[in-house]
Image 1 (spheres, one colour):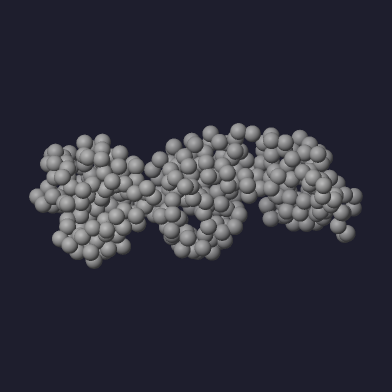
Image 2 (tube, rainbow, N blue to C red):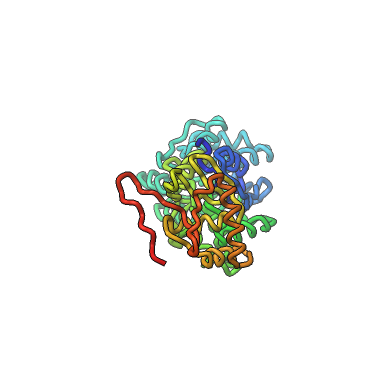
Length: 380
């Protein structure tokens, strides 16, 4: 099966490049829910950015740090709009140029400046360590901010004696309309989302903040620590969640494509492949995979199959299944269970996968693995 994420629902919290990430996920079969957790406000007309740019022109920096590609490009474009683009580039050209990652590095080169040094880890920590390896007393360092202040980074430079010029090109802020994020938060807390992706630390912090406002942060954290897989593009993005004990899948290369590939490996591995009645059965978010073929499920069918799969090979009583369906908003009677089981069998295309045990209930007839003995039916 080539659609590694078929049957799973994946949330995208990104504001920038959300369409790109969503398309990559959909190509691999995922159902995508988008709830932007923040928005980017460009500051091309901001007096603080203009003042900082003028400061760089009148007294050029010795070191220039580019933290993001979009931010560095925005800085140069803003300067060009004010008629000082050429002067700014000429002031930056003699400086020692540093870029946090390849996108920032590409933006520096695209501006016609010399190729900057970039850390292999693409982290601000390694960039700062590189800077602190040299004497910084009296050195003027221009730091392009990326959506929010960098107090620890800037303070470390100040403590080393540097004169820091902060370049605020854009800011992260809460989305103007939080309806989509509100809906996404509800789905995550209810376990209706299989994985949530984060591409920036402010997005993770924004979701935690909204959950606190809605008084459901405990429910959110319980979901993110358990049934809902968290995928972050890098450790910096993961930091606000890590502070709350939320684990995450993090790709080795901090890229959107690598993030999707990591999800393709991690999500299916959370769902065991069960040998049932001569077939291979895997239960996914809103679908089942039978011998490699994806079988979409209704909410009732999903609830029933998940309940049975929690105890494969063991009998689950009609009453227990009725209670599970009641949790999905249905009438908890045994007749409703029989009808729901019939619909589930039809959806699976293999009625033998759900076995009736007369007067006791239903089960997934789990088969032995290799030479292991066949499961013994439990006593009622």
